[in-house]
Image (cartoon, rainbow, N blue to C red; front, side, top):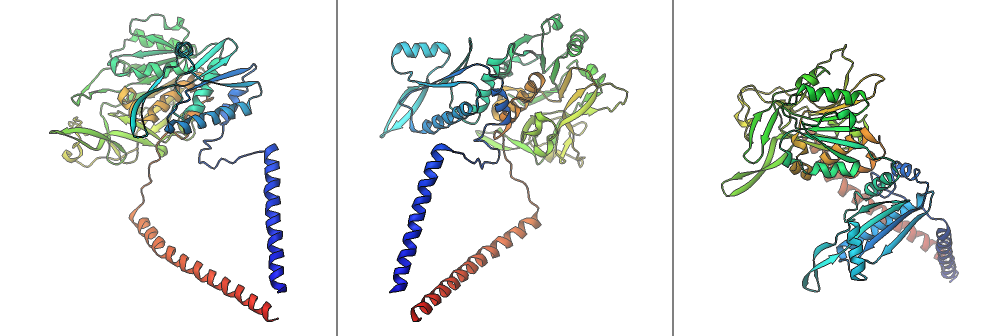
Length: 502
């Protein structure tokens, strides 16, 4: 009986200790609280870049959140996560950070006022209680700082929310936004999304072949896309801009593809001699890759067939420079119908190239005389290809002088269809623009958690080894654990019997 009472006493003490610990933890957590972010890229923690942007504030920020009360259930977790991110900004801000929640559906005047700010209602198809209805809801945000404001019309995507808030604060604290000139030579209707991307990061300045005196426009960046028959007079103006410290971002290939009928033809961009004087050339052949490529849809009779298309090259993390902030955080960029760069390596040239992106080791150039872009191109080849890594993007710098030139041997990657298909392409372009204007303030925020995580290929021998290890190790571990539990139970039972007998 004494053993029975001893057990009760011991268990009571344990229960009292547990309750005491729980109460103590709750009291301490009310005053001191912390949390651990165990995600791979610390997605629930403000990045150092966001903290640096908050340090720029020297006055109060007011954030007005416009949420409808009748949000459908799938949007409630998004609302809560956005509130959490805003709270993180408030917690780390050294100045006053006021957050207000406003009901936009209070009355018609309030709704009109909110829409005048640029927050449009979302029309959603909602199914609740076996009924389908179209519901109008608001999910927007406005940030006020001094006499300025920044509007985020929709907060339906959590992934880029820290970036959008940081960018808004950066715009509010900038005395003058970067002036970004955009020159699109051909197929302008295929590059409509470029303006939207540029307007997020700076002031858009449209440029065309008739624009004169570029140096008087106070441009920080000139974005050149798909140039065709550019004259020497224009490239001379580019050189003047560079001498004044501007950066040039050139996306130009020698082959153009009309994706409506899949026809390819050679084009003369007019920048060949200009680039050649700086030690770079662009190939006249397209690149293929039989392993690292994207899928494309092709019409086969009445059916749409999707297959791996060797002309849509994927540059993965291992192909991207890990020493440059533009590419270090990326994991995938799509280069459709791309040419390659030829780095001439002239030691006397003041412009020194650094490669940012290459193709994989399994890529090869079209064979001379075979210039088609058919998805069965590889099957029709009569010679073995020469596999090699090719440079796709490079940056040109001069010692101790301002001005940068980024050159990419591809313009198709910035067409609307490919920007919509590949988030990595949007980040790649945005990183270039931001690096050339604001430095690295937001690049790591934009890049993390945004791109694909492709599975790594394993060789057959390693696959077989993993298979047999997992096949044998799992049941053996279960048997060993079971034997261990039986042994512990047997020892415990023996001790109890021994105490009862004594």
